[in-house]
Amino acid sequence: MNEKNNFQSGSANGQDQNFNQNFNQNFSQNFDQNKPDQGYNPNMGQNYNSTPVQSTKSKIAAGIFGIMWGAFGVHKFYLGYAAEGGIMLGVWLACFVLCFLTFGLTSLGCFAVQIIGLIEGIMYMTKSDEEFYQTYIVNKKGWF
Image (cartoon, rainbow, N blue to C red; front, side, top):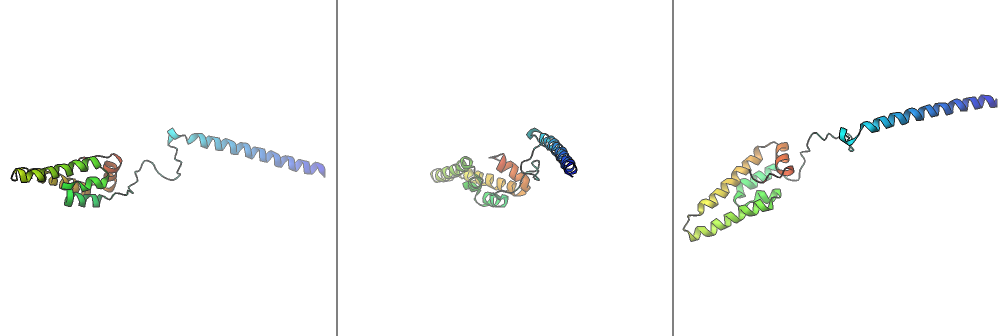
């Protein structure tokens, strides 16, 4: 009876060893196939080729800010472009102050800055969500 038990336990150990060898081979093959340069994805199930469109910045809000308060650079500040927003605000303020000193000759500067804001606001709203995200959130395109 001991021989029978030894034989059965020996075959079970043999099966365990075969299973372990097969498992280790399959695991190492699958692990080697998932190298970062071959598209390894640590978040499993997410596709890195598609861009996420979820953003804290709304294209509608940026567009409305550009259309309504574009001369002050509000849409630029909203998108995180402090330098560009400061330039627009500074040009508008300078033109506004100079407008009184030059009897309205620099009012065209104020008007031009407002037109830039209007154009950018319309551009924001007409882009698709993904295009807006790629252009203004990811690539940080500051002007037009």
